[in-house]
Length: 629
Figure: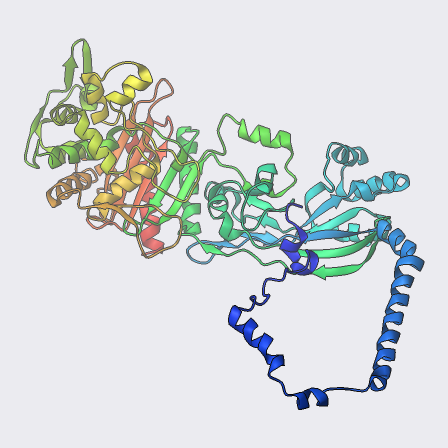
């Protein structure tokens, strides 16, 4: 136990209070008056105060008798019965049993339970209370209930130097009752109340909620107002970790007088545990489930091994759904997870514990062109009407940078403005624009959109991504910035890296009219705006028109959204990612022009964003406006 008894149970168990409230010493005037008091009394008064000694004899006899009785009782307790009390005190001790507090419940935005507690218990053994002749019998009885061997139990006890050893941290109510029924024949065995954390939706919410595990040595040594006790459950990932201090409760305790043989002789003190606070998330679990299923279905079609998706309210910053695949069932941490099983989980090549929507970053491909366009419009390098000739490719020395249309069909777009360039995702337009704007301005506006730094979402291990510049390249790669680097970054390639969440926040700027909001997983009506008024209305209008034109006519996804009854706006992305194939992106919002939701879908090494990700986004739009509009 890390705490002193008086910290848990009060002064009655920790010592007496000191004399803090003693009166102050009298001052000089008070002493003077006191000294003069006797001298001013009259002789007559003095005579009246004289009392005959014979009248005090009964009082003397009474007090003398009381003192004799007290001395006799003290002699009896300390001398006659003292050896008996010492012997009994050596044979008894006080056991402190902890009643672990249940954690707070976690709800989705509609009141659906996402994390709760099931009745559970923790099984302990106190090695010092085990009788040598009964050890084997104790181990065998426990083994029969737990379904493990007696040798395994003995090994756990032998390798520990603690006063109490956890044999099973998550004992079911049924097994606890069986052990308690044998309590009289199992001295040194303790069953503590220890609720089991349960996640009804398992892998659907694992990357959001995280999981809990038994307090480790670092947790027990933390200096905090309410220290952890051995056996407490601590949030180790996700919301469980972020809101640990809210979700954890206050333990209850039971003091039990126990004989040297481990037999309970009665309770001394008991207090009830206080549950942790409950919290409500912004997640809509039904949409979470639909997004997960839609992604899995598409991945089965194209053979992708990993994907993620984010659904955001662009005005409040609330995350309505956040999915990362592959995933894991966080309920496994609520069972007696073996070390080898945990090692297998964390070493899995598919990185099951990685939240790809928040903790992984990728080159954004053509989705980044909305930021290059914004930089060009804001710096005045171009206007909405400015046209640039698409020649199909650009050469820099012996390097050739091609537009996708030229590469596929040997065709060009002709003279086009920024709206058309966004709708058709014309690389040569943005190559030229990048040269005109320069890498420093592209970097500036990328940072204005929140790229290159964490968003502040309430999840640990969030990636900051990367907005590269010459200083970074010199420090990291030992070489300067080349003109080709500027061309690459202008179309979202090269060293540039963003997370799906970061891209969603950037696109939300156009959906909500120019505000960079802070994303949150907590249900709220009070948005946190990190930046506003950093884009003019002309810039917002031009980029928004390009995003809308992408979804109609001969826009890149006009074939998919052209006949859709809900107007939307979006941008495709196909980011080169080595021999394994390009990463696919699509980020869009609906309805156009005032978006209610922003959706971003990313699939690793899946191909073209227009073919692989945009159809999933469309399905999310359909679901949302049919069920939540």
